[in-house]
Image (cartoon, rainbow, N blue to C red; front, side, top):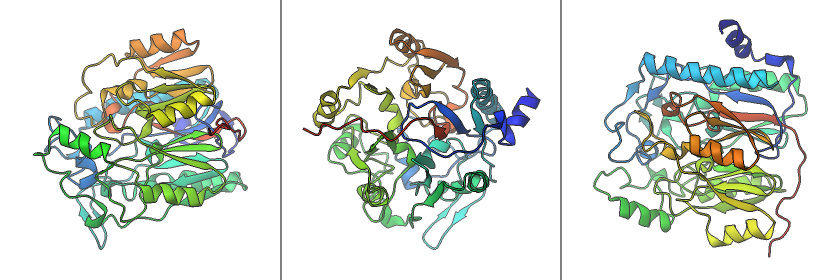
Length: 384
């Protein structure tokens, strides 16, 4: 095991040359980054983070470095995922962890610790030939992009036609957050009312977006408007990618709307998985149907609660990593999701991953695609 992981760590696994290009979530995966749990912390209270944690969560009042025992257990599973991907002929790279148990300071705020480098899906997205760094909405994740700079620097040397862009760093001052989301006196019904009215914890003070709010479907980029991406962030993406149709999308059924990959996940052309508790609004449902897509409600989670000290929901059950149009990785205990995908004709690779959940999510969250085969196609030519 040690030799295998050492090979993975030097970002030369399988000797696959660097080629930066992605157009979809389902093209044949050739090169990916898998996160690490090293040095991870639960950050002290801050507006964007605390708004995502339910009042009854065991994370309330807990912050500081995560236990070494939990870090080791998560890394075993992250390394295991990496080994599976390498065995499938996929190049796997790993980020360089920082000392996350250090404060973050700016002229506008001081934050007690950082977060970690699992999951990379939040920070980076590859669109066409470009790797884009997101702004991030957590103060504790302000400098997280630095974990990936050594890899991107190496990619720039090998693939001389790729582009590396970083969205404007937000100030994340108090003006960027809505007062009241931190209050434990706010009921769940009130939260749902705010979400329905698109009143989220982030304001429109400055562009904010996270990469995990974006779904790539060829010429269409669906971008969730919620806690971690605001409309100014979506507007910035439209200006940055003028040749793409940027489609703002929201899901009123989710009281903690952040990151789209536990809500809407296309698995191949014409087939999309939708969280039944966060259904597509009628206008988006009709867009998919009009263009020949089948909308499948994801199977129910096998678990009734998340692992300890995990801020993600039980719907990590549908946080699936596609290796190609016929092959998917699913957490091994999510038996209902595995059965559903098997009946849909997929080869399902069960992957143990629940020990990694608390560090930032499931199999899709824990990875970010650098190269998927495929071309830039139009999967939604019919607007009306």
